[in-house]
Image 1: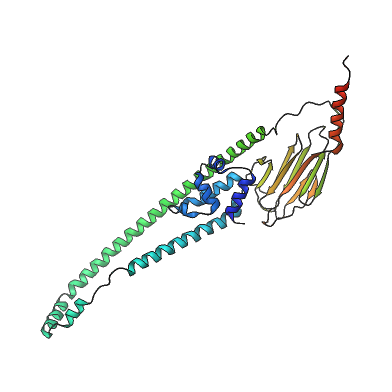
Image 2 (image 1 turned 120 degrees about the vertical axis):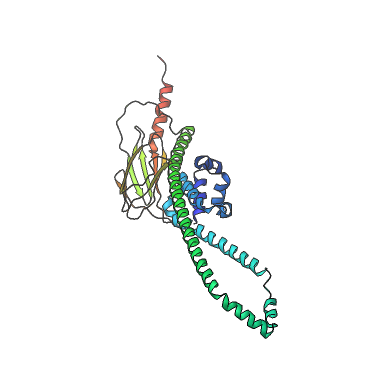
Length: 332
């Protein structure tokens, strides 16, 4: 799957519109659509910022930029190469359409008399030394122009390098701001969906131990919800990795890169699903509530661990029966 297809699928999976992403990244909607359609003609006036646009889009959606960077750079270089070839072909066609010089002067020269040829030869011999002096002057002037041009080129390169560094710093800061904004919007969405509603207080009861079972890349945590169950995730990596821990599309962790390990405990107030996705799953050792999990990689080389938190089968019936019994008790 190409990088732009990954970005579009990620956006639709998060149920975000192009306008939502535009508000988070501050990129024009037509730029977002052009990135998803791989339409680099939209950026043909200046390709230098396309890379930063795509990186900002990746960070806003929680997509690992390092995995897509090589493909994005190759796509931009290929587009620039095709555009330069088209420009070169246009210049060749323009040069071919220009009129060629005629040989009339050469024809006139061959029709001169021997006397005229001797005069022309004498004139050339007399003017030979001044030509050499003029040639030397031309060499000196050309050298000065060349040195000046090289100095100007070096200066422009330094200016471009400084501008690129400033643009990179600004892009990094903007990416952090967008990540914070994404987390804020996700939190608002969670509240609107009622995922953060406080559970009613219940009478204390003997705690029943929760159970955790593992099947491939799926972990099931079964609880009576007498007390909110906890999901403890521990991971150790063989190489630095970025991690996304999400619930209903909301990111629950700091998505900055982890050096060699990841640890987080999530308290579940209601049944739900957690998704744990490391950017570098190779060599990872993962446990959920102390149970070892061996993730299975999909066709894209990704590992997505699904953690289902469900209520025990009899618990819901017992709660309903207890509520019904309280309602049927006669008032004193």
